[in-house]
Amino acid sequence: TSAQIGVTGLAVMGRNLARNFARNGYTVAVHNRTASRTKALVEEFGGEGDFIKAETAEEFVAALERPRRLVIMVKAGEPTDAVIQEFAPLLEPGDMIIDGGNAHFADTRRRERALREQGIHFVGMGVSGGEEGALHGPSIMPGGPTASYDSLGPMLEKISAKAKDGAPCVTHVGPDGAGHFVKMVHNGIEYADMQLIGEAYQLLRDVAGYSPAEIAEIFRIWNQGRLDSYLIEITAEVLSHVDASTGKPFVDVVVDQAEQKGTGRWTVQIALDLGVPVSGIAEAVFARSLSGHAGLREASRELAGPQAVPLGKEEAAAFADRVEQALYASKIVSYTQGFHEIAAGSEEYGWDIDLGAVSSIWRGGCIIRAAFLDRIRAAYDARADLPSLLSDETFAREIADAQDDWREVVIAAVRQGVPTPGFAAALAYYDGLRAERLPAALTQGQRDFFGAHTYRRVDREGAFHTLWGGDRSEASA
Ligand code: NBP
Image 1 (spheres, helix red, strand yellow):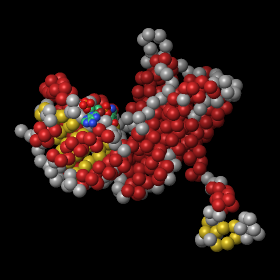
Image 2 (cartoon, protein in one colour; image 1 turned 135 degrees about the horizontal axis):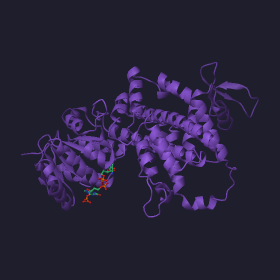
Image 3 (tube, helix red, strand yellow; image 1 turned 120 degrees about the horizontal axis):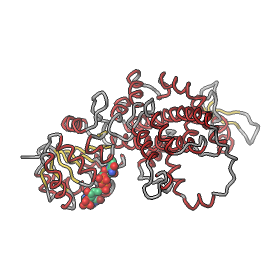
Image 4 (spheres, protein in one colour; image 1 turned 90 degrees about the vertical axis):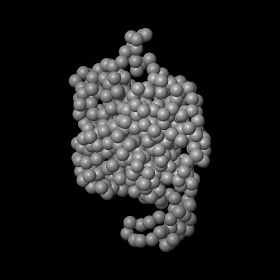
């Protein structure tokens, strides 16, 4: 017998993905650099389905039916290149290499180009949902040649998460690096979501005066409404958890320095290159980085702040409702920015990404899964060429309803000295887009003054320069 699919790289993700394929009835060839992992997988989980254990690369390739489908699930970066170099010479035209790691999309583009010359289909595949997702159904974002999706797609649809309406959380995102690009932005949005939830928590604690357990209850209530999402749900779990050794709220015994692996940072770096304002995601990345500067924070502890006045009980409850509005409005802005980045990447690289389909496949399996994504899906269904999520009538109306409270929350945060870079940046983005006139006109004047960079006029076509150092007459440039 031969395997319909092979997985090499059997750490948590690869092992669980291999088991997921096997549990869905596929024969799976399994391989890992260190053979003991392969052995352990088959010993522990061999009963779940049909596995073919391969010790060498040659055995692994020989076990696969043709065209071969070979999934790589190793550490992103050099290990991925090493594994490709090991296997590519053993493959034939039409075979597929599927990289399920968190590769940078530029690496995926490079690898796809190189392997295409050999006739090998390279599929850069974003996988979200962590180890649980890999086992029970992740959200899958495959890129690569359309032809490879014809044979790979049905298998991925089987192992993927399913949205509440039963739709599989996978789609062919687009050519070459499109899948990994979308996975990258997914992670950037995840950073922003987490930051906004963190800000809501801190406001409820420091301004409204609630305890972590009380805040957990508030999040549980929010989770029954429009904020219903995996991240809100686990936030309530984390906040209600009590540390066994001290009896204190768990959140109070954890060092408040957030780490990051890089995909959020990539989202911001690429957004800078594409000229897309993803201020909410950027603030989330910077907030993690600020938290990690322990020495700087220590040295800054004595800096002056406002006299904080905690709210009374009734005011606190009303304030919590406002925070819900601020969180929801800011969330709409984060997604607006993230989808803008995907649209810009799609345009830049000619990927033709269907934004509605992207919102669809994030509805299940992944970390940002949420009822909210159904609304985004509906927005793109209503209008496929929506210029921005904020142009959708429903979102525009919801923000209109939320904006007074959103502003009040940012004002309260500023007044009490609670940092809310996510809420504030989202609001500034919203007001920036709304503004009739921006000071960009002044910026253009300054640029023309010191660098003769020219400007355009509101009333005439063309580029102009004012002779600032002379008689200040205007010349066509
Ligand atoms: P790791 O990222 O920890 O990678 C460990 C695997 O890489 C092992 O199988 C290891 O083999 C193999 N490997 C390394 Br390291 N260097 C190698 C080389 N030069 N040649 C061959 N194999 C090599 O595993 P993971 O946490 O399961 O993640 C796998 C991929 O999935 C990563 O790209 C990750 O970013 C991505 N991802 C992870 C998550 C998550 O929640 N963890 C979610 C989504 C995506 P060995 O056993 O011989 O050392």
